[in-house]
Image (cartoon, rainbow, N blue to C red; front, side, top):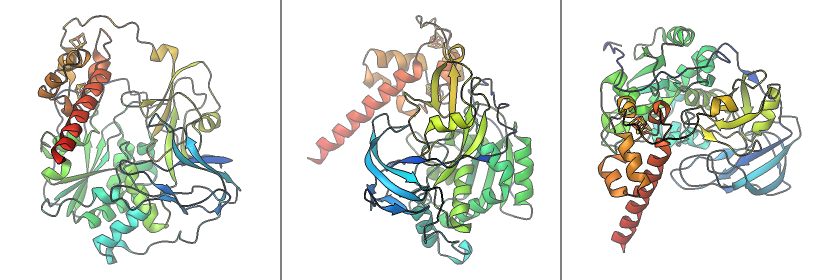
Length: 451
Ligand code: SF4
Ligand code: SF4
């Protein structure tokens, strides 16, 4: 490609201990076949699915078990072949409350459903046909937000996209699932990216990887050799480099406006794992039924990167890693900065599960909270240039209008402010509360305006 893109960085951010050495050199291994999977019908941003099977049905790998006609949604498929034992409320690692789930007992044969067949050459298909396959394959953003990919690659017609950024930053400490995919399946990462570019009509792409992953950068550079319109860029290693807005700022020097999305500045961003899922959907005809999960932490006996079927219990994967060597204090889905705390190991792997992190009491106990000492460290590190101490104070005093006026909705909940706070103030938590209250007020106002 002709235009040279030089990586810069963004203001703020932090350099936490990355602790990726537990798993960064561990090749992805397939997890054992689970005896039972619990597959939530709602695993994406958008409308929940309805069950497409009944108790007692025999199902096969790749068969649709949940779907809806809603535009913002993604169907779910069976990850095993076997018998549907129940359709009931089950634990969900991201939603807190229980959600309807399909419980399937595996017969261990991994028999494929008839629909699982390679889809042919994407470049012979229209963008709309490509989007239909992406949608039917249940693909969502695998970086955590789980936004349906078919919707993402359909921006408004008056917002042309000139650059696709493939996000391989993986800036959260501990996590290495994307890193291993980029090293081991670089060709599929690039194939999936080309499918996404075709679907969205995007002429050029940049694969963005933090410079603490030189092996991934080398593998991807080899995979794009000879492709004029895709380049690989190394980014400074800094958290939260993988945030969409910061990636766009660092690589293209474009600012997504407040309340805006990447397409407002002509950009589309997808995660490296999402590209591999797209590649599997086209080259193998396999919908999204499994993903790489980093199972890690100082008290996990043998931390590993496991290719796990959606619906596998967290506890089963920890057992596959030899179990725990000490008392866990906290189990998170995701990394330590933005991960979601779990109350039970019965929760299943879902499409958005990038990692299972077990923290010891020593790692999770930061000591008591004390009053703010006005050191302004939280202000210095905020990558969005907010004033976290004030936002949190407004939230704690229920002064949500003040929080809104101080741009609380711009907070990306990266956790940098809480991380550096010497008084251990729960800043992100307080800001999250304010954001939820502000959004609720906006919804009430919209409903009132409709009446
Ligand atoms: S205020 Fe929000 S965006 Fe700023 S550091 Fe804290 S969590 Fe991150
Ligand atoms: S980092 Fe903590 S103690 Fe320092 S100003 Fe911010 S809230 Fe106060």
